[in-house]
Length: 226
Image (cartoon, rainbow, N blue to C red; front, top):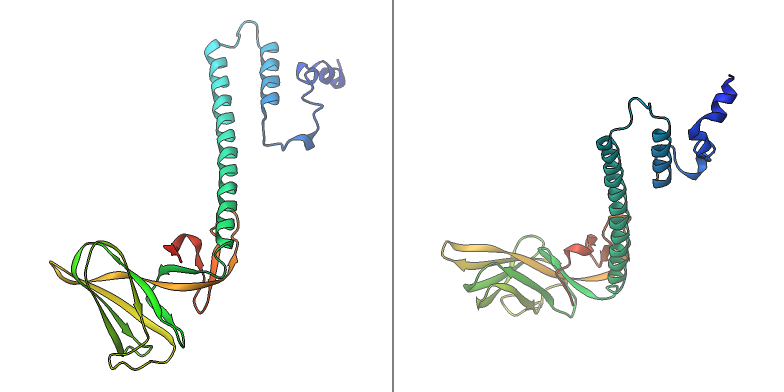
């Protein structure tokens, strides 16, 4: 018998596997149709004296079910990720031209405006204060916010120093401290920033907000939209 005859009489080829175009599916992927064709070919060509044990057959079916289930789960998660990314991109685009509250120590004082921010207070306190210093580290103003409950506490600086004089516009550093049983403790400060534009991230990346006079930040760090 020639090799050509062997190939022609091969049950696997009769099932159409050998004639399946390689372009239909990458060589390293096994779809549901191919799996069942191979399973039928295996049953047809098994040794009659050593038939495929039922537990082996069930085991192979279980393996395929697991692989197929994982692939479907991956596709579902991929679709969910794309949906979430599109939602984030849409949300980020609506922030252009608005102000957001983000973690930071440096706030921008406008020429005729105020400097706004907030403090994340981890516990209630009998006394909370915010200190403002200039670029050289010199004290400019201390704002006493008094007793406060746990949570976010907003503040506003009018741009005046301790003598009531208007200071030059620019960046000023903000520090917050609150009274506790252990003594004065530092608290996290948040500053207001203006969103100029948005850069959309790639797959799995958050959109990036481009801020006026500040380094870009990802959407996930925004604590509040103002």
